[in-house]
Length: 119
Image 1: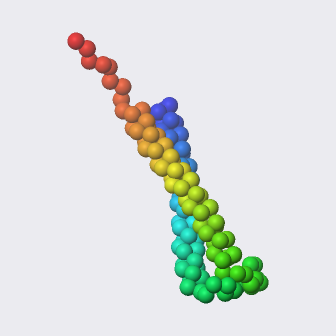
Image 2 (image 1 turned 180 degrees about the vertical axis):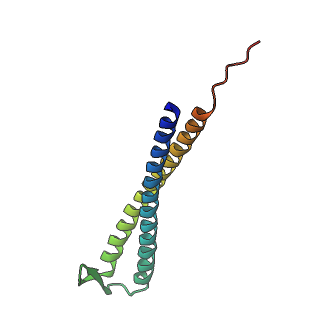
Image 3 (image 1 turned 90 degrees about the vertical axis):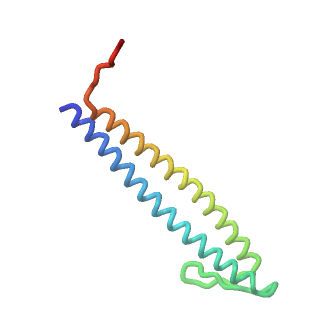
């Protein structure tokens, strides 16, 4: 009966880790889309003449900004997102490794005890 309890514990831990992994992957996907959006906007404003003004939506208000100012802001945001993506990728790898370790341990504990064969 103790084995079932420990198998249940492993299953619960794995389920919790899988939920964490799902959340990490959702956040990662969201950031990847944001980075693509930033790249698209940077590409668009790069084609504008020097000194050209652009408008940025801030809440429900359009704010006039210089092209270079907005480009710098977007580049900084993109760099922050890239760092966060790197962190999320590391977290994803860590969770996957922990799930693999727990599964192996669970399988090992589920195997019947075998006495070592000696000479």
